[in-house]
Amino acid sequence: MFSDKKTGRMASETISQQNTIAKGTVITGDIVSEGDFRIEGSIQGNIKTPGKVVIGKTGLINGTLKSANADIEGKFMGKLLLSDTLSLKSSAHVEGEVIVGKLAVEPGATFNATCSMKGAIKELSNTNAAGQQTSIQKPQRPNPEKGQTV
Image (cartoon, rainbow, N blue to C red; front, top):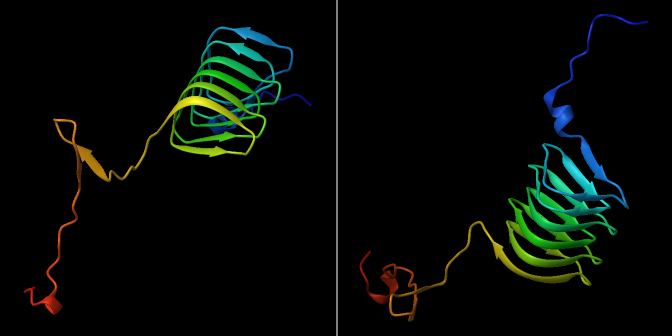
């Protein structure tokens, strides 16, 4: 029944585990984890994880959240730094500063934040040193039909 042989767990098993902060739980302080989070309680502090954070309808975070992805149904106040996608459900309430890769907002969500989206941004105009806006011109290709040489 009992053996001395231990079964080894793969590292990916522990990383894929989800941490849950239950409704009615209040945490004051910083949290650093390798796993995902589901928050139904209240956190006053900072959270850092390379995974996904889900803030449920009764969940509240007041602080800084650094992760890859986040789904918000509850309330978030503070600084939100995501390397990938922020998804705001219809019951979400977000205030503060948001820096994300992608943003998805359902109708009904409250989003009162300064938002910066990083990634490949095509710039259509430049501002010169005098503060004047200048347009970026595409290089012209010769057109043989108009008598221009190729």
